[in-house]
Image (cartoon, rainbow, N blue to C red):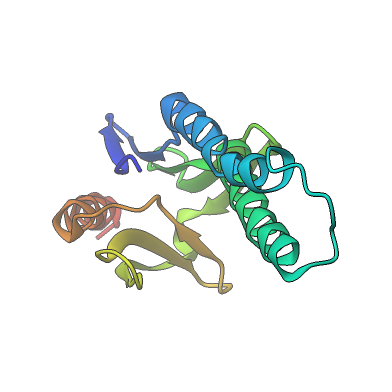
Length: 171
């Protein structure tokens, strides 16, 4: 997981949440290892009879291992890279996302439709919580940045955006 990156220019703030090619390759390679179980349990053993409880147990374990491999492949090819751009000069908010199997999608909203920016915590049962920036729009649309292990990093991005937005409000 790579933390969201804030890129600032004169009239733009960009939050980039890429899924790096190295992570995609790592996940694809990781998908190979669970396939050892079906090979060892079904192919290498050379079963003589398939209607016994030991073969059914081996088949059940192998199906789970193949499902795990499929999940890793899916994560490698469908993991989204996203970008949220606050463009003050055009008064627009642009959300772009893509993946190798997901066509690049770009949605543009007026900055006036922005209703709230929030730091949101997502709890996980097997690890520490992650945090992401949530952009709420008037019509109920929710745009999320990529996750970060650090709440402080997301809070810094949120406060910087709020500061720039506040300075753009006409008096």
